[in-house]
Image 1 (cartoon, rainbow, N blue to C red):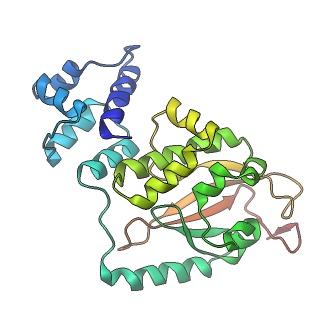
Image 2 (cartoon, rainbow, N blue to C red; image 1 turned 90 degrees about the vertical axis):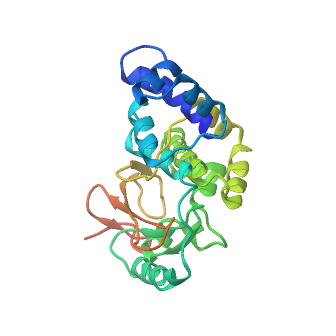
Length: 259
């Protein structure tokens, strides 16, 4: 998953967005950027090409990139997200305390490789695997039989998770832990097929609405919307809250809505 793969895919996407019915050419991208065709061809071929901020903006505009694609492009070109500094420990501890004591919705804190590093009691009730050693959202969602049972329309959800993984791989292409996670997920044949079929990138699952089968919580499917919060001063960390459609919170103890 190199930048060159995405550039070719984004040229095809730009053609669709512009109503062409086919990818825009390298020549057109160069013209729209006001650079030479050779310059852009070298970039797409993977040759060393400087990409200062002004050029990145021109490239994003020329390829008609959406906000998630722009974030991935900038993160990749600038060497990925900055590493957390030594003095961010206090900020991370505060984020963990916030999540662990939050209510009334399921909430968890995940790192750049989708490891769950904190969660509240409600999230533990909904997802008992959070309490297992080393829980990982993408590993659970994409490699376990349990997820295929509990995620309604697993394929659609898998496409969303893979789109987020593409963003992570592109923006943190030198991260060994992310690479290991990618290899593990792509060892699942259906995930490999979905990965090869698409090039969509999604930075955050903000506003993603999906349904869950949680028979220990409710005898009906529970539909939620994901809300993503980014703690200040802690790079690569995200807080995810799952907001039920009805506004009610379901608990394992009662199996019924709690207002």
